[in-house]
Image (cartoon, rainbow, N blue to C red; front, side, top):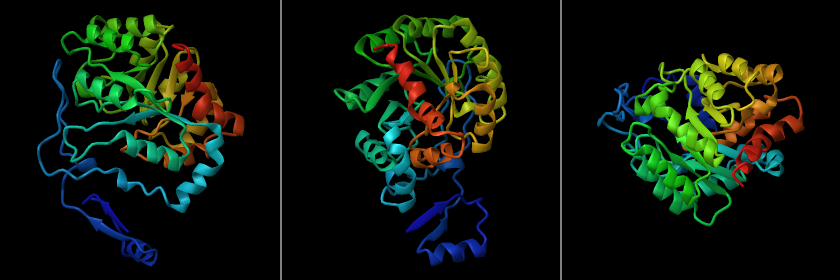
Length: 322
């Protein structure tokens, strides 16, 4: 087995020896940027940001070995809780070498014990990419289609209405990739109004990477639209996590999705504001659902809390549309 790491990763000789004894070869690639992409410029208003055209590292679902005994050990105690993953991409980002196919996601879900996944396009695509998501999920109960929405795309509200009438169960927003602040009311309010009308949640990028998606903006929008369930993807990693958790204390419609949030932070904030504000998500294919589920088993005090975290909270949100 070969593991490929970034060229800047520090791999000690001791680590290489341990890996070699386990039959694993560590290979470091030449420079290509984080996750195989070059520097990502901040988008200007109305402009979808793009990754540079330099050498790209192939991203394949085969990076996740479902036959791993460790994955099986993580999945075994959690499978009965029927986890719902709130954060899964399918299709192909512009910089990728191959598609993330629905069948590959389903295989990964089976291996890691995930019962259902909310799926949507990669953020560097136009809204029309949601059509492929619809085709991939048609007639399935284990893949739940969410529509990508860029409020700066011409006709975005009309396109989103058509998707919701078609049967999409949620909305994906990414202020950083699309280049707008979440609290730009003139373009964001119509999207939230549609979410309210159709009783669907909004999952929205919330990484501490730009001023376009801060804890304060999430607090503002959740308060502005109390009937809309707003899920902060990545839980504000990590500088916004405390602010989101504090805001959620008084906003029952604000939720933190767990991908990339450290287990000690999750444990602290879950104990502080309640597990009802937290939702399992993996950010597949960039992350492993098995790894996230393993982390969550370290983040709660009881099996009842774990069940709410991995399935109960999101299940109730999704049931609002019926």
